[in-house]
Each structure stands twice: as C-alpha cells, then as structure tokens.
Image (cartoon, rainbow, N blue to C red; front, side, top):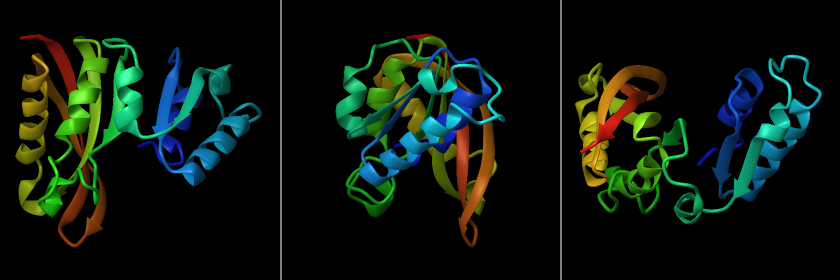
Length: 175
C-alpha cells in the first residue's frame, strides 16, 4: 500500500502533520520504510522536528489493517488503486478498488477529508478521467458521503498512451 514509504517519509519530514500512518504488506518494503524513518532522525533536510516519531509504519495487509483504524479521524489519505491483484478491475476479476474505497473513505473526516487516489488512464480519458471519477463517486455513494473533485494530475507514464494519474477529492458531507 505505501511501498517503501516515500510519500509517508516526505509528508512526515516536510509537513506539520500530527501523525502519519503508513501500511504495507511486503516485508522488504517495510524494512526500507523503517530504514528511511531512522534516517529522518538525522536528516538535515527535514523541515519539522519529530518527524520520525510522528510516522507510524504498520506491516500487514491493508484490507486487515484499515478496519482497525479510527473512523472519521484522517484529514488525508494517499492511496493507490489495486493493480495486478485479485482486486484489480482491469483484469476482469476484481472490483477496481471498490473494496479499498469502502475501507478508506469512512476513515476520512466527512467534511474536508481529502483522498489522493492514484489510478491509471489512457490518453483518451485525459484530462477528465471520468472512469476514475465514477469509481470514486460510487465509493462515496456506498459510504453515504458527498465529494467534489479538487484536482486531476498526470503523474507519470506507464506505457505508450497510458498514464498514472492522481485524482484529489474532498468530502463535503454525508448524504
């Protein structure tokens, strides 16, 4: 889910976030994230004090960990849509990340909570990424939440005419 923790390390080291929670299943990636956390303690580029102490790295399956976290307690969540697993909708067997969304969205504060959802899109879907927006709207509807799209960005290329995108949404209340 968080991989080697690059986003979590950057957020902990460069913002005044009260706490940063990172979840990852892969033990090798968790080991790298924990090494990065130790390096935060002595890194002169860190902009805020106590960055390493504010970062909590949890090893385990996000599908098992997310239900144990406090509901409506997160200001922001950075999450990638599952890819190349049983949950991947692109392979025709999964739900395109809906199971993740049903666990993630209730963790966000219902007014003002933000989700940064990483997905994949072809060039013809750009710049609106309507398929991704539809998925997020269905997830919000299933959790009785209202949302607005804040921003859509192309954040990388994965193949010819295939892009990694980030859609930022803000929750605007309950239905």
